[in-house]
Image 1 (spheres, helix red, strand yellow):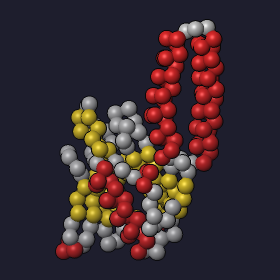
Image 2 (cartoon, one colour):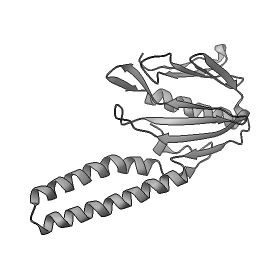
Image 3 (cartoon, helix red, strand yellow):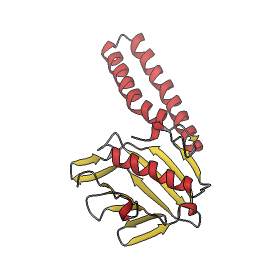
Image 4 (spheres, one colour):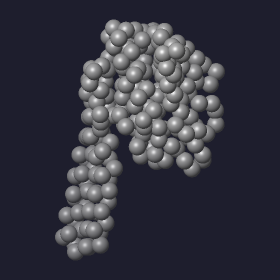
Length: 199
């Protein structure tokens, strides 16, 4: 499906569109920024949210096994409802393709249009504060356990075990460290979108 972002000029109402496939089965999730607001279509459901009706946006970094470089925007409406916009799209059973440029352009333009509409939406990035605290607590417990295993392996002369523990810890820190760093809870403004949660 390639990059599923499209832009139309002023003669077509200055619309910006984006789409992605969340799974191999089912239709694509389609979004369009129009003069009236954010138009969306997901299977048989569709809607049009005025820019001043959007109550919150949360940007986050959400890697998965098939795509380690994936981002997500959760858009909420004042009267209820939430839609998710992902930066990747399923292509085949073995390929989830990134759409970094299209996703970033669409999210930046959404914020710009909301700002022009006088939006008072809550803009946050990363994980929720409680979830983030729970992740840090789990990592602290895991670090203590790994340190204990490392000390035991050193004392018993199990150098193969030492190498395994050090290698595992380095790999884990590389993969999880990026997730934790990018998803630190924060608030932001319409004119300063956080780079850590955008491709």
